[in-house]
Every structure is written in structure tokens, then in C-alpha cells.
Amino acid sequence: MSAEDLLALAERVVAQANSDEQIEVAVSQGLSTTVRVHDGEIESFTSAQTQGIGIRVISDGRQGFASAGTLAESVLKQTLADARDNASFAEPDPHAGLAEPDGVDPVEIDLWSEGVLRTTNEQKIVMAQDLERMVRECDPRISGVRISSYGDSAASFALASTAGIRAASRATSAGVGVQALAADGDQTQTGYSGDGAREPKELDLDGVAKRAVGQAVGMIGATKPKTRKVDLVLDQRMAATVFGLIASTLTGDRVNKGRSPFADRRGETVAAPVLTLSDNPIDARSLGADTHDGEGLACRTNQLIQGGRLEGFLYDAYNGRRAGLASTGSAVRGTRGLPSPGVQALAVEPGPDGNLEDLIAGVEAGVLVFSLAGLHSGVNPVSGDFSVGLEGRVIRGGQLSEPISECTLGSSLQRMLLDIKMLGSDRLFLPSGSSVPSLVIAEVMMSGES
Image 1 (cartoon, rainbow, N blue to C red):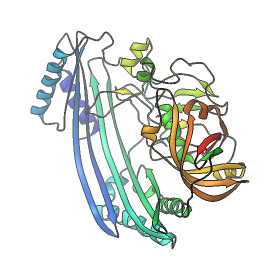
Image 2 (image 1 turned 135 degrees about the vertical axis):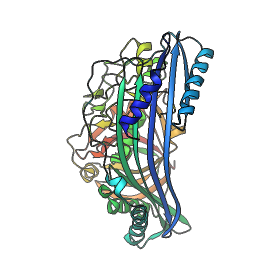
Image 3 (image 1 turned 30 degrees about the horizontal axis):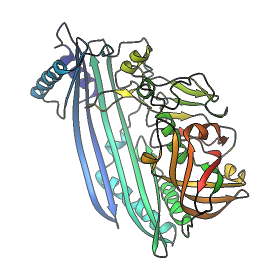
Image 4 (image 1 turned 180 degrees about the horizontal axis):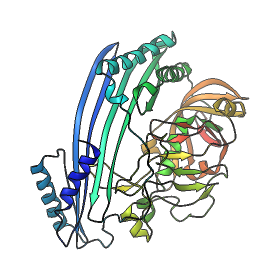
């Protein structure tokens, strides 16, 4: 079923609205493949076709929602009835309501590639096998590969509502990932890397293998470091992880509840002047790009931090109303879930300081970060406090030195933003949809041996 067919289906359901209710219908359909190999053999192969519908009904300020995993006509009728029934039991909310058209025209971007559909299952399996082989052949110290995988999707989405919203889109993506193992006496060091693209032929298997191997081998002989302050050097992938944590605190739901360390700081300087951070889902180079948000409003660029100054937050329709503001076209959702505000395609503008090697050369005493452990439990999104495990390579006099592990970084998201010391010019578009350069954060406390 094409995106246009899905839209027609959604409109048929919306046409059943009673005069005293608002209805929003989101529908999707997609194909996906996942391949996992181990020791050259297929460990698992999944090829699936999925469908979904989510119906939201609002009447007298009461909201009901229901969803289903099929688009059969009988199920559509029952799902609408369930949403209406759920609304009748809901508490009235003065801010409940659908997104209203805001006059912003969608940017026409092509997110579809027939390459995903043309690639045979055999070719997909071979890519996962080739990636595993490349890792094993890359360095004699590699003792194994925990998993090598390939995955792709081709999906269409449509949304219609009684507010006059009509939106349809489709997108494809493909990705690979691998975890390399390196022998270290009676211990095993690991390294992970992956890549994503619109179609399989754009995937960089060689680069993925080399990054995973480099990380695993680079950790051989890791020791626990002394407690001290260090400059942190983050490549694009690690930088995206940190900026993703920061961006998650800049959403309207957190701000409205006072559960963001930046809630009352709009217009203030919150970061080093070199930093400009936005959500930019209209850049087709990003795998997070889209034409419409999860409520059918046109996607747009939203500046979050510009030149170090906090410019604003991300809102869906509901949280915008609560704040007395308009939606920023930042609703994210799964078809079978309700929308909420979120980042779609995080973007950090490149800085003036060169590539990762240039940043390392400019650091006298620091650490090149390979991984951060405990991010879910070690970062407080309300206070911004940051305490996580670290693995990486020591930097001395601009040169990489010994690997370290079993240590902890302690800081806060607010402090780390202000302490950005260097920002690279090597922005990379990542499988997560983020586009981020490498960076250096000055004098972060690293706790190890006393």
C-alpha cells in the first residue's frame, strides 16, 4: 500500500467523526529485514511486513487513544470504537486538542531509495558475513566477533485529522553493525561500530570494520588511571551521545514540568560561544530527516543553542499549548503511540578546529573517549549531574598513549557545555540521524586510583 493509499484510508476513518469530536488517524506500513551472523553462519534472519494504526479521539477535553497492528476494515472500526470508549473514561484536560495547520509548507525531500527493495536476501546475508570477515582479517589480535548484523527498512506513513491535517511520507534505510573482540590475557576487550544509509550500497563496511577493530585492539592492556582532571576528546559518535543527552532536556514536556536544568534559562548563555545546536529534520542527508512531524505539521529547523545562547525548546501541540506557545513541529511518535516532543535530527554546526587528529594534537593532558558506560543511570536529566564509566586512551603531549578503564567521569551537562574547548570541522552524519563534529571538553574530573 502506497503512502497515498494509506492517506486515503486515514481520511476514510476521519470522515466518521461525530460533530462533537476531533479525530486524528495515523497509519503506517513497512517492510524490514534483520540478519545476524556468527562464525560465518546465519544466527538469525527476520523478514517482516508490519502495519499499524493509531486513532486519537478528543471530545469535551477528554482524550482517548487506541491502536492496532493491522489495517483490516473490521479492525479499523473496532479501533475507532475503542478510542471513543477510552475518551469517555478520561479526565478533562483544557490543553487537549489536535495540532492545527500553521501555514508552514513542507520541504520536498526524497527519502526513498529502491536500492533497499532491489537488494536480495542473499546479498544482505553476504554483507553481514563480509563485515565479520573483514573484522577477523583486520588485525591478528582479534580473537573473535561477537555479532555482525545487517538491517533495513522501507516504510510509509500517513496522518489525517479533523483539524485539516493531511500528511504522507515514505523512507528507506539500511545499516550494519559489528562487535569485535580482542584478546587481553584472561580478559577480552570489545569494540563496536556501525553505519547507516538510505540504501545498502552506500554503507561503508571497511570503515566500520576498522573502527571496531581499532577500538578493541586499542583497549588491550587497559589499566585504572589516577584520579585527576583531563580534557575529554570525543569523536563524532561519542559527541553525538553527549549532545543527545543535552537535547533530551530541551523538550517542552520536561520544561513545562520544571524537570530540565535549562527550564528557566531561555536567552542565557549556556554553552561556549563556538556551539550552535539545532534540530534540523529537513536536511535530507540525515537519516532522521522527514517532511512532517508526528502530528502532521511540516518539519522545520529549530535552533536550540546559537553561539552559546539558549534560543528555545522543542514543542508538540499539547505541550506548546501548556506553555502558551505554538508547536515547533517537533512531535515524535510511533504509529501505535501518542505524540510527544522530541529531537528528530540533531545537528551541531562544525567548528574551526580541524579533524579528530588535529584535536588530539592540541591536547596536552587528556583522554580520547572510546565508550561511556551507565548513561541511563548515571545522568540525571533534571539536575544535569553526570557520573558515568569511561574507557579510552590517554593523551600526553598531543599523542595517544596507554588505554584506561575502570574509572568514572564526574561533571554536569551544564558544565560540559560551557567547557567546550575545541570544536572540529569534521561533521559526520551518523546512523542515529545526528550530524556532529568531534570536540574537546576541558578539565573534566576523572576518578580512578587515589
